[in-house]
Amino acid sequence: MCLAGAVVLLASACAATPPRAPASPALAVVAEDPQLAARVDAYFAPLAAHADLSGTLVVMRGERPVLVRHYGYADWPARRAHTLDTRYSAASVTKGVVAATLVQLERAGTVSLDQPVGRWLPALADRPGMSLRAVLHHSAGLPRDLPDDFPIGEAEVATWLAAHPDRLQTPGKERYSNVGYALLAEVVSRASGRPFEEVARDLVLRPAGMDESQVALQTADHVPGGALPYTAGPEPEGVMTPVPAPLEIGSSGLVTTATDLARWARTLADGAYPELFVDEDPLGSIDTGRDDNGEFVAVQGTLPGYSANAIAWRGSDLAVSYTGNLFDYPVLRMGRTLRGLLGATPPTPPPVRPGAVPLSASHRALAGRYEHPDFGTLRIDEVPGRGGMTLTMPGKPAYWSFHLTPIADGGLHWRAFDVVFRAGESGGLSASPAGGGAATPVPASTDAPSP
Image (cartoon, rainbow, N blue to C red; front, side, top):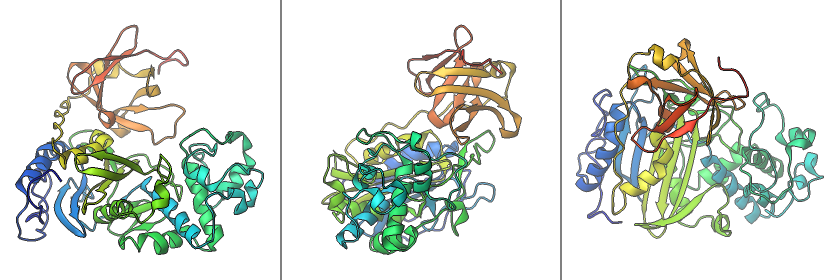
């Protein structure tokens, strides 16, 4: 590690908590590394002070948390503070748990990753090219998501796929699929004769020391000690409850703590599952790379209202994790931020976001339907029940819904992606980074009339 000296458990878990949040009880009366603490506080405290960050950051040396910060609240209306025991939904981090569970079953001789899925799920017996390994690699030709009306927990994914062959493509090309990992959870259940949640707990979570974690068909807000989910919202609170996304056990479902998430990254970096790293792209949607601290293994996931990131370095006892309950622009680059904070050159703190102003006629004039070159079709409407102006994405699930903050000069700040919309040419918009940068033309859509 490039930081001088050993980092030890901090005296206060909330040294960087913004003024709007209460202090949490001290963990222990010991010293902390001033260089690391200063880096973390300089970057995160201003974001938290403007309600752009909510969650728990923990740096670990082996089994010991050596730096802890809590931001915002686990329950904003009740002002319930985050703690190291608070649980968060980890979304796609679950995929690595699925992959590790299958490896454990393969070691036991129960399955082979090269077997077709149809070996265990007869509804797909006519798809011999759909191997477990191909599904793990997102190259089995499966759709990205189940339909919004799929009866999660009541129907089998394999049966639905067999009844909708038009949703399947020829295996071979990589195509990210949440459906695939939900399918693999069904394989685990069929091959083991037990619910996937139990098998994952016994074979993967408990051996990794993740005693406070579980896989369940519910988000963290339905689990004792769980943080409630939030997304960027209107002032004065600055947060609001998001439109929830349906869960698919296998592609999501892991509920964990910040320390347990760091243990998971540590388990992977320490080589507990080398089978996941044989190919160029690791199985289980796990990332690898190299930075100032050496080779690392990283996991990440997001759901409406939740985010999870953890990194551990090979040949080191260093790990860092961030578990959050607010989807806002800082979480989009959280992995890179965490690595930078623990590296040789700390990242430059982002500029403070534009301040909110009262909604005016110039803001309302931006309502309409547009075609963004990166995000596709966008629709901006005034939705008083959701705090003013709202951005949705027609054709995508309902949870692709975001609050737009009215700012000076008639602009709207899309906080979730830190983009500012202003009036453009010919009835379109101009989209630019909130911190400054080149503007992107966003023409009005010709597919449907503006509202």
